[in-house]
Image 1 (spheres, rainbow, N blue to C red):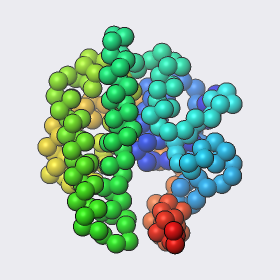
Image 2: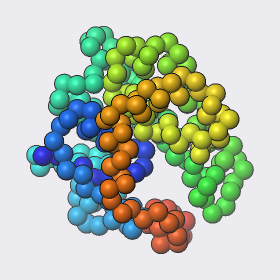
Image 3: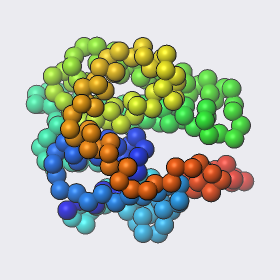
Image 4: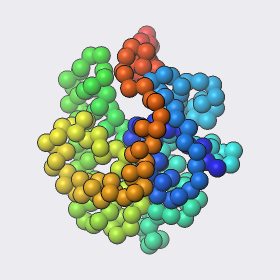
Amino acid sequence: MIDFYFNAAPNPMKVALFLEESGIDYRPVPLDTKLGQQHTPEFLSINPNAKVPALIDDGVSLFDSNAILLYLAEKTGTFLPKDPKLRGPMLSWLFFVASGVGPYSGQAVHFQHFAPDKSPYAVKRYRFEARRHWQIIDDQLAKGRYMLGDDYTIVDMAIWGWAPRIPFMLDETIAAEFTHINRLMDELNARPAAERALALPSQHAFKTEMDDAAIRFMYPQIFSDV
């Protein structure tokens, strides 16, 4: 049995999609970051970086969403490209999402909506980079049904986790321009596994208010003198 620590953020949701798609047996463990549950000694022993998702599989702890996707795909032998020659491109795109799409998307959201001082340069930089990275994804999807052609893989799942936030990190007009991303999202959202993954957070009473306490737990640097 896999213990899956999650909330409704983009990174946990892509792992939730894999778990539902694969049918692997797992136990969802909600972790409310707005309540500071990520900073408990118990959870830090699972993920020292105090982030979700994380999971425990047969006593082994794993963290970082794309590492988890790769681990689960190799464990189950599912949602990997059928052509062995596509393993390299799969890793390239998977790490592109991990090192570029996710971080720049997250920073674009943070500096526009949550930073205490709205630095014009920070907003401009991260909006620019988020849009640039998503355009690269859209251009790749213009070449085929999925990121690796005809094979639905963990790369598409990694994109599915973040893509719903594009209107919030950029705006509705820009989001509408990513026609190939929108096509992929429509297809994946229609899958029963995606419906189950999207419903998972609603089964738990996560805190929704971003009050001062939540901000302290999620963005402690705001109150730090360092």
